[in-house]
Image (cartoon, rainbow, N blue to C red; front, side, top):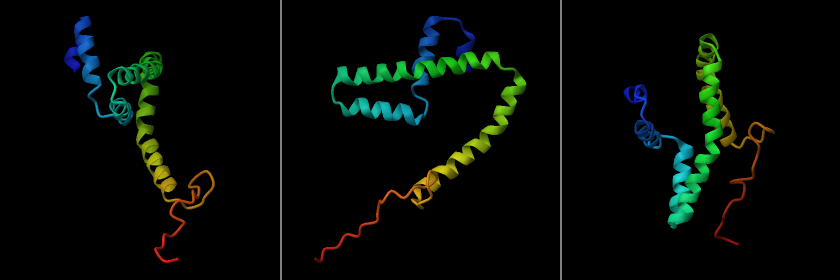
Length: 119
């Protein structure tokens, strides 16, 4: 893809956009699954169009924001990313443990009822 970015051709950018849709991303997979679940070409297409329109502002801000920040700031962000990803992983695991800690791992009452076949 790096070689494709060096070319300044609209068709190449279209190809990059198609290839971008094949990248492994959970949110894209959720949108695609939702579109497929409608079992209707028009509704599925509308879901994907609105998903694209909804993510476009964030993608544009990332692209523009990268140009305004210097290399030093970007290096600091890159150094903090592993800490952020690890912290999010720990937080998600704690939330899934249903420990009853307010705001961190709230007790949701899931699994509290025991099912018995004897009355």
